[in-house]
Length: 286
Length: 286
Image 1: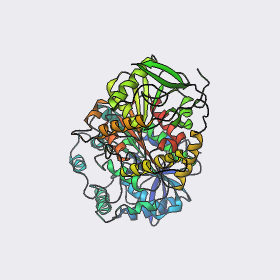
Image 2: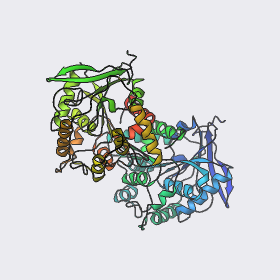
Image 3: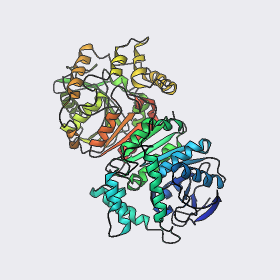
Image 4: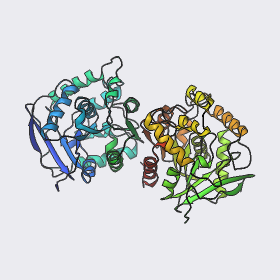
């Protein structure tokens, strides 16, 4: 049991495969912790406290930086297969035998790789605002994504208002609330991701997204009950990619939220926590 | 307040626009009842007691037969616009000022028409295993649907095992449980839909499904918060039609369940009731 929250959980470290992994662990201790895998250029501080603390009331939450990201040592490898292997090393170094895995955006690609490479380790899988191998425009990035990531912003964090939210008034208002929550933690924040790390992530994205034959067959190997979540208007990884995940995974539920974009979990944090908790708590899945 | 359930609620009648509508009303009385619109050839007895009684714990449930269907008098008109107008007449004849509307399969087409024609009457909309105007193969019916409806079955009710469930063992097992629940009510059952009524429904389906320009523009007029639900493998109204509804409605959430078909609400009745209740109870929708 811990009384820590998203704001107060200290950054801890564990060694695996020659990497010193930074992580934070908090919430109600129980059988199966939920391990969070972060988006492009994101650190532990990019998670929404309304989401992480929402889950922490019911279960243990583990945030971490994968190898080469922010406060973790090492280099970002050039493929998601290797990032998955690194994440597995981290999880096992904590002595965990079974976890639920949540992946957001490219964290969802890592989450898929974790599940493919360590089937017994993963009980259930949550894939948020992400896509399959060879998903539409995933190799090069979408035209909208290029524009959004290429633009300059008054405040650097304002980039996330464009990435994670739609242009609607309601979505932008939710985005400004998210940014306030996102800036709440003041002590012991993670350093920004380096340009080198971001470039390596881009290389891995291009490899993941490359066109291949029978690209989605691998999804049949992910037998775990899976919840796929997306916003209605994700222009970073197109919303249709979530539909494709659902249609090709053997045991997946899909939830799409209205008037929302790449940050659907940040726009509807309470609803997201309730939906995911229902999914994780459900005794049987077909 | 009533202590009636799906099994015991008496069939009542109300007159509107020259039609004598048969209906059943039960559950916890409150502000906004939930009005159920049934599928092709279905009557009030085709609803799953696990669904209707599940809702009845929290809210008032109203089942009815539209004009020309089973125990209601009159003729089935040749368009869903007219069926929507008949349903509105029925709802207003009960003295109701506001309702939530749930439509299943072609009941979802009626539900859309109710909402388009009587905006102030409808608070929220639930569209289950249904589709938009000019949805793929909705005019002629899908090849799979033709085969399923054209085949002969040992027990006539077994048709529904093919319509509503996938061929998987788990789905068929859920289907057999549904058929047991479906046969539980023994007294005061509705008579079967006549061939004449079914033919008129088919005529209306062909009209609804006909190809047209800008077919989905009308969905922008449905401003109500809407929940769209479907099975992963609906071959009666293809699952993609639910995705299209979500993408074109201004304020819609989508939920797709795994390994399920046209009867997703009958396969996961408890989960369906929880998801829909969350949606109906949610204070704000973006």
